[in-house]
Amino acid sequence: MDFNVSDKMQVILKKINEFVDKELIGLEPQFLNNEFVNLLPELEQKRKKVKKMELWAPNLPRELGGMGLDLVEHGLVSQALGRTPIGHYVFNCQAPDAGNIEILHKYGAPDQHERYLKPLADGKIRSCFSMTEVDMPGSNPVMLATTAQKDGNDYVINGRKWYTSSADGAAFAIVMAVTNPEAPPYQQASMIIVPSDTPGFNLVRNIAVMGHRGSDYASHGEIVYQDCRVPCKNLLGPEGQGFVIAQERLGPGRIHHCMRWLGIAQRCFDLMCQRANTRKITPDGKTLGSRQIIRAWIAESASEIHAARLMTLHTAWKIEKDGAKAARHEISFIKFTVANTLKRVADRALQVLGGLGMTDDTVLAYFFRHERAARIYDGADEVHKMSVAKRILRVHAEKGLNAALNLPG
Picture 1 (cartoon, rainbow, N blue to C red):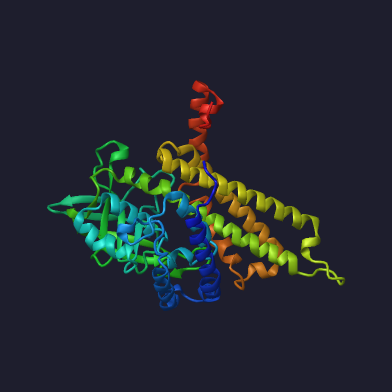
Picture 2: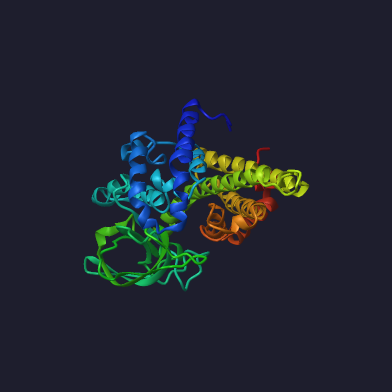
């Protein structure tokens, strides 16, 4: 793997980091202390600036109006944007839209491209992804209670979903529902596009997460599908292939998440260092940074961020080179490694900031609240550890350590 960052990418990253510093971080107090929907007019102006700078949708192909960056390049961009909670939204590479665009682009029919994909890629509408269910284990995506039964030329959908992120204000949902209950477990579910104005699509509430309900894009919805009828032509991809499509969506998506988490960890680290350098704790002017324990936290945090970043970039490189299936070990490794790196760095930063860190006077408390979920969503850490260990043990018994860890030799 070549660790050099191309001249092109260095220019792009410089522009993006400058934009984040000058245009977005100053908006964080409004983001933290007001409803997201109230910030939309100002964010829309920022999005127009990004388009003019030709930095729009870095992960999308050029035919969709994006920059056409590969997975490694977008990983670097995602880290830069992750330093602020509004970075990905302003550059139109935010979850869940980014993943929905990917699967619409690959599996969508021509009329689905016209109605959903193009306006989504252009930032004219938003979408949501409706898979997680209240009464079923999210760690086992083949266990779904939501059904989509055929009735003539329609699917009739019934079920209850939650953590459908950004459902508030979304133009449509991509719903995972059981269409083939008699098929083998991994071929029972399908993905179906459901416009949010369809009768029977009921956004019950925005779920309060750590005390914050959120609004518009910055929310997690609970949806009840009650005799929700959509045409069969709204099927996305082949019937019974919902699990396969979901796995294709989640593999590269974990690169996006992990690099975003590293951007968050970097921001927490910066806040910690700034506080350590400036917070006086003795009459003679000594700062927090003079204390051995603080220096140890800073050294540990810097090392852990660096290691997690290299691991994630290597995984992105391997996906690009050999495909997501060949990188299954690495995808699991980065998921729980980066999530826990973020948790530790944010916790140390909050400890260094003390009472200030508990307030919304900085972005740190927001990160601490909302990114705790990094260890849960996209597969709980324990599930990734269990599955990757099972594969390692099997291969180790047959071929030895190097093969078990995908190492050469």
